[in-house]
Length: 519
Image (cartoon, rainbow, N blue to C red):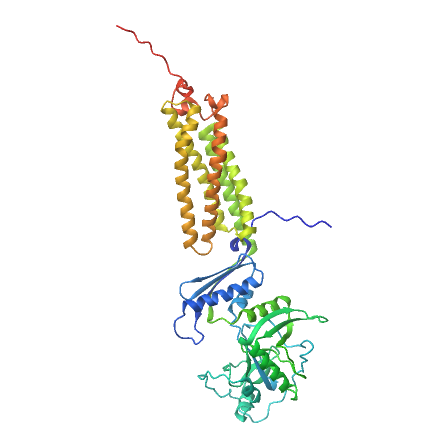
């Protein structure tokens, strides 16, 4: 079977392909104080890595002002992009002490991809948590508020040996899944899973910072996607010690919970020591959600918290309409220039039309190749830059032709004027194009977002215009000047004596001889 031929088309930007632009406003995790430039740039790098790891081409992640990050990704919708870039990815491993039914879940947008506990792969067998009936007579108020000022980090040996107090158990009975419980590493924590089961968890045994790497895939002999975790040296030591301890406990205290952004995404039980510093997160993952979670865990937590300031969606249909509109505008521009050239320059308009055709014929494959080589994506401002290049190419010819007329009026023949006019016009053409090229370079360096597409396209087409004028327009004029029709100023040639404003003799380089009588 023959492979399908690759379509020779340029890469399209967000406004032509469809996608989402989201603006995130940053604040410190504590909620107070200014946002440092280093933290904002670190967050930008993490978000860029997350987006790039998904294989999303033509994405753009930029900082704006002192608190905003703007993320533009083609072919990705609002909820998917918010989930990808807004996750703080606070990961921790805590031991389970009690499991009960926790009531209705809070109606919030989950920051973790839709994973729900299910049987993990071999080595981490899970036991179904058994709902327990609440004891009668307990108060129905929420759990006691706990202080969160301390930043003490328990050693994993202390975390393993921790036991819940009577107050912890009472607070747990009162806790519902709609409640918000403060997450402090050295204190117990209450959290729920997707099924509405609530967990009484001990202090953090292994922090998420000890995860060295993460990946997703389907284990051999299984059918469901999992997320694989590799711990660093400290994490491996703690994980080995913790699984050794859990393997001697009875249910549910032989389970440890994997908590991501205050939600239990998996709570496997342990029957034996698991050495080697490797663990797996199982759940009802799709290929995409498993890959997203692995990327979030791999590239770390965001150093700042973010709020969504604005979201702009561009549908694929709207993008195709904009592309069609841009192409139509370009065609109209070409036709108007061609009609004007035929009206003013008569048959000589063939030089203008062929120059424009050559410019289009060269610009299109150059844009396609730049898309393949450096990832350049054509956007709507880029199309505007290409349309502007039509005027630049026509302007170069006008400069050259007017210089030819000046040379003819100075008494040179048409054939000579074509050559001498070029020597004087080329400097003007180069200066004009140099100004456009310099403007494009400065605009590309200083501009942000889609304006860069305009600057880049304008710069490329300006360089192409220089090549067209030097290696096509001028040689073509020389060839036409040597023909009888154009060289002798034929009617409607655009080089007729009347159009040039001289006599035919002057156009041909002949002077009338005036008889001088001597007195």
